[in-house]
Length: 184
Image (tube, rainbow, N blue to C red; front, side):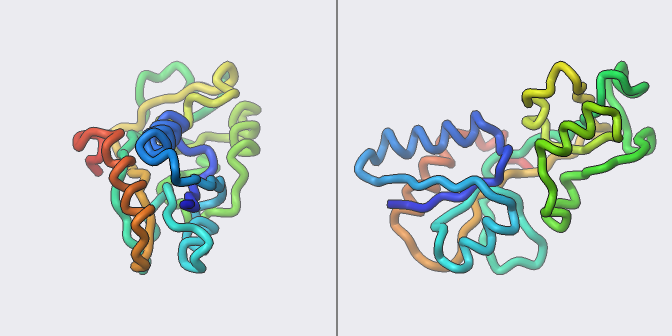
């Protein structure tokens, strides 16, 4: 078996593609899946309860990071916001940013669903990955491209312990995204 952790609210399409391809290629290997915070992901890889994770790189880390897919950053705000009609937006135009993915994982004790509710109710704006726009609050929120374009990557996270099943999973994940999608 392989124990795979992933950051909650990760790009569903990416996660399903990686897990499905791995399962199709290696049906005899059971994949145990765990959604958690980025910090917990790192802790569980370090203590050996996870073989690999899909999440975000931490600075000054002893882990290895293989960029898997890079996503443009967008601003999420209420459809009632004065910003909602903009085609694109710069950081200088933003007021009251209540969450910025670029500061993650330092700000790792947040609840994404709670953040979406706050945004939908007009509490402020958030800078997130483009994949976050496909949430269940899409009737209440608008996604605006951040300019200039900035990207942040979802990475495969692992440590120095060797695992054949981890290597097989990594190979499967690298097959589901093109080299252009991995650009940082």
